[in-house]
Every structure is written in structure tokens, then in C-alpha cells.
Image (cartoon, rainbow, N blue to C red; front, top):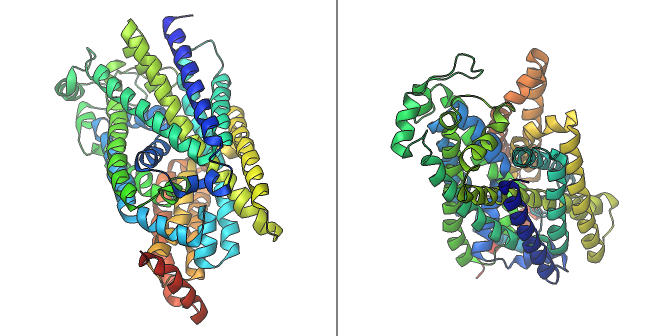
Length: 518
């Protein structure tokens, strides 16, 4: 066993014990459904801010997006991190956090499907939303396993990837099932501290690598970079140093919009606003979360932009997904300090993945246990039964996402490509307009959900028939952005053509009175 492997195992053991303790401590506060799903609406600024940030960024961002875009685009990829922090975090908190907290408390809604039912008086919309969450978010969690599994395999080449996926699943299941949202909020706080510390240390080490030479050296060396003759993804120094992405400008813009505005409609992100305790916590949380996202997002893409220099322009054997793992082994694989830092970085990426996984699983489990099953049965389910069912479904969904990741099931892999954009495209219009406008009707909101489904589904069908499914998957960012834009337009337009009844108008007026209450 190498020193890197030994230190990583020790760090993982300490981390696992800490996570299990948080889950056990939180168990007593999670015995009610409100406590389990939204922490009793009493989560503070730091825990909520870090929960939002750690859910936003998983190992997929580091291993997948930062490695791929940093390698292909260069320094311009940092704009994705900036966009995520400003558009996906800051604006989301400023525009939606307080209104979401107030309205969901007034409606006593704990989930996105539950919010749709009570805001628009539509059980059918609740069922449809719950199905969308289940079908597309559980496969999304499989991508989290795959991103982290490939990284651990680089440090432990003799261990199968599925072993690391199983460890991730087991750790997540323990504290999530035991402590629910309270456990995830406080573990996210710990995970966030680890992530910030690790990213800052990694930036310093990477920039001081002999092939990089600091910030000024990075720009100069990238400018003089020349691709090797057999490079499958050749590029130029001008491309890698173009601050606006050069020939990838259009691609860069779509990715910024998808990964930033997409958070505005994702239930696992919006759910953080249900739980924050008051307006003062939101004001502090806005600043904390934005700083967190700037450090993590910009740091990840900055590190990715150095990859061609550190790896000598040679794409690793495993392809784009192996860029960041290989880079880490290159810069941290030697020397005691580097090996210790590598162990910290591994825990960083484990933290990022587990926080995202727990949020997605909790959202999916609650959509079925709290929203779908009671609506289909048409009978009131006892809170104790819903609690037990939600805990069991958390276990089931962790297991399902693990199986999907290890088996590489074609249908599931295909759904991963569209999950982020499609889910947000379905929910963003009805959710946002429902917070701000009394004139939005049930039919308008329902058309907003359906427009997201039809935009992505219709475009996928057309492109697949013309150029094959792989071409459609490559266009998934554009589809997701289009679905979000269309949903935002369709909801108010259809609502203007379908007025609410007098009874419904009175009900909506009563709901919106919550913003005037002290």
C-alpha cells in the first residue's frame, strides 16, 4: 500500500465516522415529517448556504465539466464558474429565497410537487411533477457515482470502481436515513468547509507547478501551447487564452445558461429555501453561498484550464474523464505534503458528491412517498407511515442509483444527459411565476410543465431521426435552455387566455396575503 492510499483511507475513515455521528445526533430532531424533509423550517444561514453550494457542485463538476471544458476551451471556461456564482446562486437567493420561504410556509408545502398542488389547486399537477422528479433525478444521481468512482480508481488502481460507488452509497444512506434534512444540512456545512479548504490549497499547488508558473505563467504558457500531432482534440494557444472562449463562445454561453439558470427550477436546490428559518438568515446566506460558489466554481474551472500544460498536451488513456484524476496524481502524487493534500482533495470530492446525492435522493424519495403515493391512493396517509415510507425510499433510491451507475443501463445513461435541463425546463415557469403573479392559472402552469417535456422530447426525436441519438444528447444543453425559456413564456401567455374563476381568484388573494403579514 502506498502512502497516498494509506492517508486517503485514514482520511475516509475519520470522515465516515464524523458523518455517521451527525446522522445519529440529528435523529432525534427528524422524527416528524417536517423535521425530516425541511428541518422544521429552522435551518440557519451558514448551514443553508453551504447546503445550497455543496448540492450545486459535485464531483461531476470537477471530474467531468472542469476537466472537459478546461481542456477544450482553456481559461474562458472560468466564466462557467462565475456565471454559476452570480446567476445560479446570487440571483436565485435575491429573487426567490424569501418569497419561497414565505409562500411554502403559508401553503404548508414541503416539496415542489406539493407546492404545485397547493398553489394551483391541482392534484394532477402534483402527480405529474412527482413522476418527472422520480424519472429524471434518480438517473442523475448515477452520474455522481460515476464521476467520483473514476477518481478513486486513479488513486487505487487495483480496486474496482463499483467498490467506491458502494462506499459512497453506504455513507450517504446512513446519515440521510437517520437524520433526514437536518443531518444533510449540518454534514453539508462540514463538507463545505472541507471543499473550500481543499480547493484553495489545490489552486495554490497547481499554479505553482513547474509547467504552469503562476497566473502570469499560466497565460504565457497557454499562449505558446502547441498541440501534439496525434492529439484527438487539437487546439491553439489563442483558443486556450481567449477570455471569451474563442471558437467555443456559443457552446460556453449555453453551458453557462443551463448550469446557472437551471438551478432556478431544480427541486433539490429550491428545497433549501423551504427550510431557512427567517429573513435575516437569508440575507447572510446570500453572501455566504455566493462566496462559496465563486471559490468552488471558479477554482474548479481554473484548475481544469491548466490541464494541458501539466499533462504536456497528452490526453490520458481514459479520455476526458481522466484529465482531472491524472492531473491530481501528477501534482500531488509525490512528497509527504502533496500526498496528505491528495487525501484531503479526495475527501473534498467525496463531500461534493455525497452532498449532491443526498439532496437528489431526498427530493426523489419525498416526491414518491409524500406526493405520488397518497395522491394515487386517494386516501390520507398517516404522518408516521409517510415518515417510514420516506426513509425506506431513501434507501431504495440510493440502491437504485448505485445499480444504474454500475450496470451502465443504456436507458438510464440516456436520461442522465437530459435530466438537469428537462427537470428545470418543466418546473421553472410554474414555480417562479407562481411566486410573483396572482394571475397565473392552473392551465397556464400545467402548460408550462408540459412545454418543458415537449421541447426536450420533441427536439430529441427530430434530431435522433435525422442524425442519431448521440447527436441529440450532444445538443442537450441547448434543449434545456430552450425548455426553460419556453416555459417562462408559455405560463403567463396561456394564463392570460385562461382566467381564474372568482373562487380561485379569492383563494389566490388569500395565499398572496402572506407577503403582507408581519
